[in-house]
Length: 356
Ligand SMILES: Cc1cc2nc3c(=O)[nH]c(=O)nc-3n(C[C@H](O)[C@H](O)[C@H](O)COP(=O)(O)OP(=O)(O)OC[C@H]3O[C@@H](n4cnc5c(N)ncnc54)[C@H](O)[C@@H]3O)c2cc1C
Image 1 (cartoon, rainbow, N blue to C red):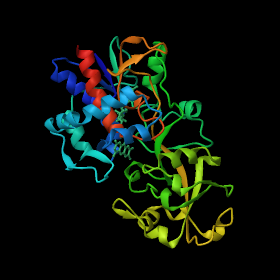
Image 2 (cartoon, rainbow, N blue to C red):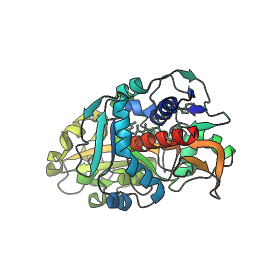
Image 3 (cartoon, rainbow, N blue to C red):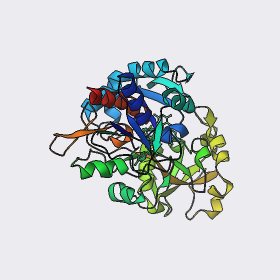
């Protein structure tokens, strides 16, 4: 049994297979284990309320969502039992339940021997955990079709290898192929150590304009995860926007930071003087920030069933092929759900099914 990818889903699947008495070969394309999980905030969560999950991710497959929602609490207990270090006992968000883990500690707790290999997917039986296709501009253009290049806000190796491999074996695609999870980031250069600190997570308090001066999104419509405004930004010219803030907006808090602090963290060249805007600013605005839509991971992917088995378009399984984590699509369509939770639960499910 091959496990392709040693990020969240792959490490979990391999650890569970070993626990069940198997000896999987784990192949990793990147220069280190951990994938995007290692860069993440480590909050593994589910919606507190099933109906809220369904309402928010209304475009997702209800049967897949059920598996993640029902199995997550036990899956988190399993991860803790493996020695993954918990940083917070809750998520700090009243809508959600879960825990925050230390990402490096997850890698250490689940570590195994890893073969570094350019294409880890090949194998008669394989669990695909290659993290989707956010890092492939070709696939992002084909499926997401943004109006400008999206900046990558994730590890650089998830180029759709699992997707291409499975399509070659007859797999079908999930819904929501044009959707992604990401953040609006300052339109400047940044590196992987700044992915969380530089996020401009205050669309809900801003007036939001595109480069042509069109106010294209109302702050009242910004979802709590802000995924919808990022996806809308991707569809404006250059995949860019300007956030315009008044004095009251700057004082608002999002989690542990004020909006003013998030603005201050943005590189100076993205804090645009009002007189330099390519349009007339709205009355009351005191601050403008130029942001660019940035992709963390894709939401659509391979079609799978509740056992994480890869399916063809007609719903029949592709023999010997499972997909877990971002490689598997169809869960968070229409909204946002924890990518780490999906990877954890589907990693376990895929391993258990493959082992049986
Ligand atoms: C800054 C940031 C913050 C985040 N915060 C959170 C959070 O708090 N909560 C949350 O739920 N999610 C968060 N996420 C998202 C989360 O990290 C992902 O949803 C999760 O890592 C997905 O797991 P995965 O196993 O599918 O992909 P990954 O963890 O990215 O692993 C994929 C692995 O596959 C490897 N790979 C790719 N191609 C091949 C190939 N051909 N052969 C072998 N290996 C291959 C990659 O190198 C990588 O190691 C965050 C992400 C980022 C970047």
